[in-house]
Amino acid sequence: MELFDTHCHLDVAAFDADRAQVLQHARELGVSNILVPGIEAGHWDGLLKLCETEAGLHPALGLHPVFLERHRAEHLAQLESSIKKHRPVAVGEIGLDFYQHEADRDAQRTLFEAQLAIARDARLPVVLHVRKAHDDVLSCLKKIPVTGGTVHAFNGSEQQARHYIEMGFMLGFGGTLTWERSRKIRALARRVPLEAVVLETDAPDMVVAQHAGERNSPEYLVYCLQALAEVRDSDPDTIAQQTTLNARTVFGLL
Image 1 (cartoon, one colour):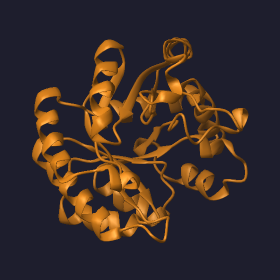
Image 2: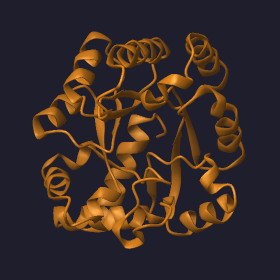
Image 3: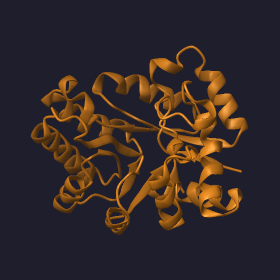
């Protein structure tokens, strides 16, 4: 069984002590490919080096909306030059996060649209971070269309899901599926087309129910697979095969 973790921050300090062991165990469990999304310019070099030295790791470069205060105008030019030099598989993690009331929505939107334009010009998919902002993100995508991508930790409505799918996006589902109280997400994962679903962990965050209170890990993608198979009343092998194909397709890794 081959699995693809489409969202895992394996480059962050939380994995410094045991990254090699985590990777080895994940591979033993079938997690043969991992997309590592960037969140700020200062982390890109380390992320790229990690992906260059470890088989099956794929880089994405982006400026995360939550860390707005760390980003500078020159980082957009750096993103363009890094894409030309290193050719990551996607631009991300980018998007809009309006969860906090004090969020500077205009500044986030300006940064997001600038990165969408960079992705469009580079003909790369994007990895979207969206909280309390799906309609705004969809509006930006209509304004600046890109070649699809993934909607990380999708938590929108079924109607919003259809809009993303029509734009060439895959919907990411992960640890939230493993919590029985996540009725809305589990119902969505049951109803959306499997051809538009990818699996993710968002490690070290969004831990699965089986390891509550611990650091999340790409090793735990198997629990996400099991949960998705359960809510869809399907065979895990079928889910694994289709979601891996979806991930390879959207990131151009066929």
